[in-house]
Length: 296
Ligand code: BG6
Image 1 (cartoon, rainbow, N blue to C red):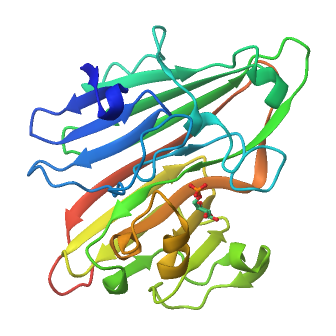
Image 2 (cartoon, protein in one colour; image 1 turned 135 degrees about the horizontal axis):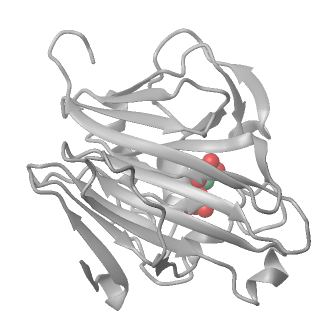
Image 3 (tube, rainbow, N blue to C red; image 1 turned 90 degrees about the vertical axis):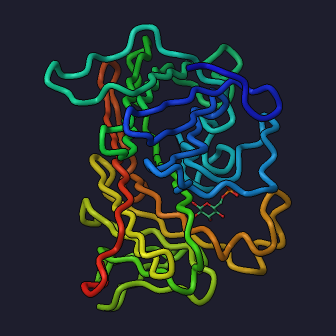
């Protein structure tokens, strides 16, 4: 269902039979809402988010492509989140045994002007799907369509903003003992300690070669988010905390208490595609009630 969202921007609303839902703006190919079957929102979007192109929407799931962060010549996090995507009229087929019935396919291709910024021809197909159980799945397929024989390379992230009740009560499991690059220390490399990760100040870390499953446990809400990822070896964990929050015009001063970005990413080793080659990167997010004793 295509309709008008904030500021008249086009959005697609997905509704699953059992009541879960999601919203995707064509601007940015940007998921801005994911609700469980009880109608509870699971993603953070700032009340100060602007919805004013070309400024990326603050919250939800921005797509960072073809450059994660500011390492490179492009604007921060690349341009995909600042572009208007289209509905893909020639999407990849779902397997015939697929249980997925609720999805939308978007596509981004460069315009002539875009070549000045990044001189490559590509097709970026994004499928956003809800499973019957209410999981949110995002699949990106990026193809090199250069006709000059040139490969290109890129870094990538699904910059997911999870909604949490109180960041001080949140724990992340699955990143213990891993190596990470600390964005707050010029990407110096460190090794994480053995304990689950908790939050008491600003964090901006790129965990390298992580397991495919990461859990974000919200004690206060008794909810666990499970992030599963494919084709995306790294994981960014980001919370701006109070000082950086105040410096962001489209982020409320207290918003940092209610969000945590855990971003499935390919950063340390850029993806290289030859003409005709396609890369696929996928996330599946689920939100489950935490069981009482296990801490899960
Ligand atoms: C994170 C980066 O992914 O995104 C941070 O690791 C950055 O360094 C944050 O501050 C937000 O970026 P932006 O461009 O959306 O303000």
